[in-house]
Length: 84
Image 1 (tube, rainbow, N blue to C red):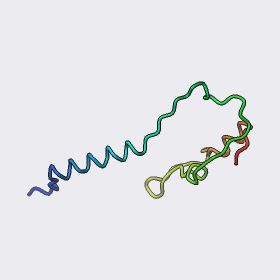
Image 2 (cartoon, rainbow, N blue to C red):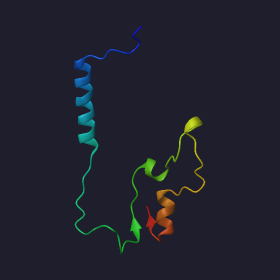
Image 3 (cartoon, helix red, strand yellow):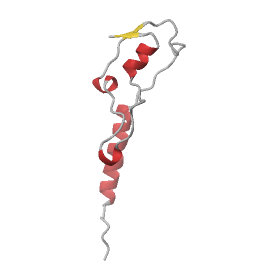
Image 4 (cartoon, rainbow, N blue to C red):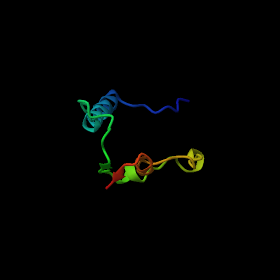
C-alpha cells in the first residue's frame, strides 16, 4: 500500500513561487561602507520585541540549558553601550 502523499506539479510550482517571494521580501542587504564594526558608539536604538526578549530554546523535546545565554541588551550593557 502506498501511503505517501501525492503532490501535483502545480502545487510544487506554486510552493516554490511563494518560497522565492518570501525570501526576496525578507532579505535585507547592507553596504558596510566602513560603518562596522562600531567603534565610537555609546548609544544605540534597539528595535523589535523579539530581538530584546529572545527565546533561546524550545519546550519539551526542544528544551535546552540556556542558563549561560546572553541576550542583546545584556551584551550591549556588557560592552558599555547604552540603548533605548
